[in-house]
Amino acid sequence: MGSQERRRKLTIDEINEYWRRLKQGTERPNLHRVCNAIRVLDAALTESGPEMNKQLSTQDWSRIRNDCFDILVSSFPGFFQIFESLDLPPLDAGSKWPANGYLEFYPDQLNRRDDACHANLNEVHEAIALRLRWGFAEGRQNVTPEDFANFSEINEKLKNTAEEHEAQTSLNRIYEACAHEASKLKKIAHRKWWQLHYLASSCSDHHQKLHLRKQMDALELVWGRSQ
Image 1 (cartoon, rainbow, N blue to C red):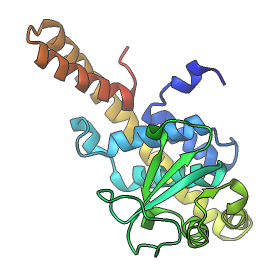
Image 2 (cartoon, one colour):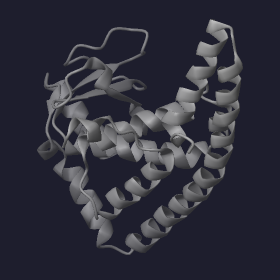
Image 3 (spheres, rainbow, N blue to C red):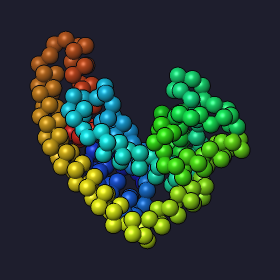
């Protein structure tokens, strides 16, 4: 994959469609796209994001974000660290597993520390968290997709049971709700982008112009650039 495709940012409505294809198994995970999806959703869900981002349905979009993180950890080799608190250094391998903590995952194919993705341990799928806990207790912090065969088996069994219909119904409900929400908020975001654009164009104060540009960049990251 070329560097241009790696740099391309998925908009939040594209992430919704990508997530559905991953969950249905019609598309294989792509490392850069999965990481990209996680970062954009983090930006959309943060309290410091643009005003309209706070109108997102946190429960549904957080579900998509957590699914993307589970897919990332279980699909690509990498190194993980465990934190009791993000204000403290990471725990040494073999330490007691925290009741509540944080996981950082560094895919092998991405070299920068900024490329790490994180999650609350209690939001990671229990089959993935259990395998990480075993490895951590044994002093290992490197994992491969083969370590999560149990997670893959759980997903495959789900497709072959009576729960499949219920799971598919839930998947469709979340997708449709998020697609409707994204379409509506995208229009609001693009109107806001143009308002900021006009303000920045006529602003003579350097610091205020920079602040307006940052707001425009935040909107573009989540919703794409207005045409």
